[in-house]
Image (cartoon, rainbow, N blue to C red; front, side, top):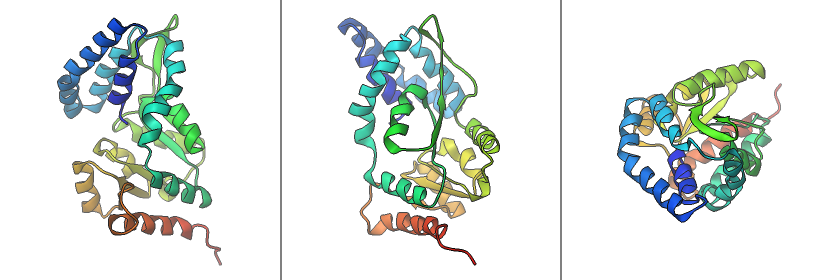
Length: 230
């Protein structure tokens, strides 16, 4: 689920039917604008997109986040994603979600997956209502690489021994700062880059045979971390 899907869900669940209709229509009409902004700059896209949250009640956004997770987010989780996380957990890795999504939306997902921590975007609120601006640090595009480095420094983590997974080319910079990058159900641009650098391409919606064998290969590499050393 991307950030547009999340906002569209909130737009459909306004306190009044007329409010829902207006927000939904405004979102639909703005989709071409979002697409252009995203191609130009992911940072510009985020700054533009989150202005649409302006005026939303902080309490309401947080309360509905659990419902959003149950109805929209959880059904989209690939079963094999949890399998990969379980293997990483057994290998003693620290599991951290890094997302441009909003923190109150990512929090239920992090709890469900049982990860150790998450890094996400945060809306600015004044008097209990969203201003439409994000607080720093921005967790988007190339900035994710900076955020990941800072997090690794604070927690004394070796990025050369770390793994990163993403489905979007916009996270390319983040992938380059870890020793073990992987493309998961990638978009076309990321798939091309992954093939160029021979990064693993994991299809978590694939059967165990065929494309899914790349997942088994990566999981074997993770399992090697469990093997005793001389």
